[in-house]
Length: 248
Image 1: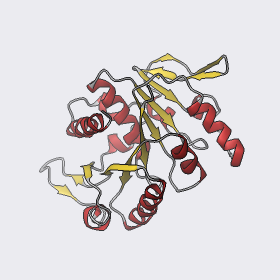
Image 2 (image 1 turned 60 degrees about the horizontal axis):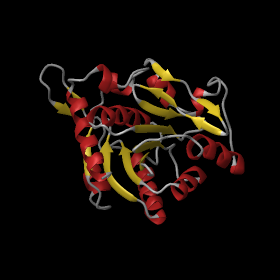
Image 3 (image 1 turned 180 degrees about the vertical axis):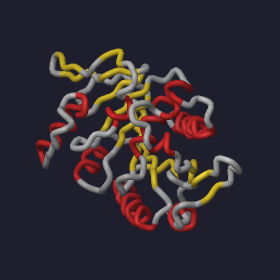
Image 4 (image 1 turned 120 degrees about the vertical axis):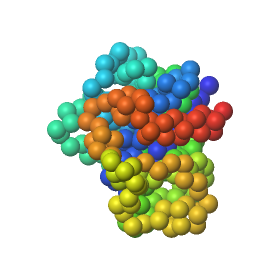
């Protein structure tokens, strides 16, 4: 049976897309008996390995009989160039070489999962067209409440809809700062995601995540693992429940 594929996507870089992908993967795994896979589609600048390097790996990624077997950590299966290359060296792929790398790391992998999260790089280019044409799935958008992010995300929405994939919703990251003493929520950016992006495109905002140091700078362990009782973890649980319902 083919897995349900969830593309986590933003037209703009630096909005926390990889952080969302990693935290969703481990939340989904803890909520259900579903087997979860996580693919880092940013071939040139992978982030996922850094976000989970503090965890104990049950298996390292390996190659056998012309098939790649993903790494395994806390029950999650993960594939990324970050596991098989020196990350101090920049990688540059174009055309057929990029297509080959994608095929090997995603399509030629022994996943054996129920839900596969694909952490897409920003932009609307060859990588996105190639992957989305090869694997049908649904898209989860991530944005910050900034004018520049809205413009890039809108281009991404138009691109996704031309391809014909469903957008299941949007996460507004770095939505607000919360006072440690009075718990008042203060907006850091001036953009209005609901009015400027969600409503015009008929897309639901699934969650608003705060600008939180431990969430934005989780160096080696997903936030939901380090902070199981935090309100942000509860938010990821709510998002994951919606994804599980969509994947049925």
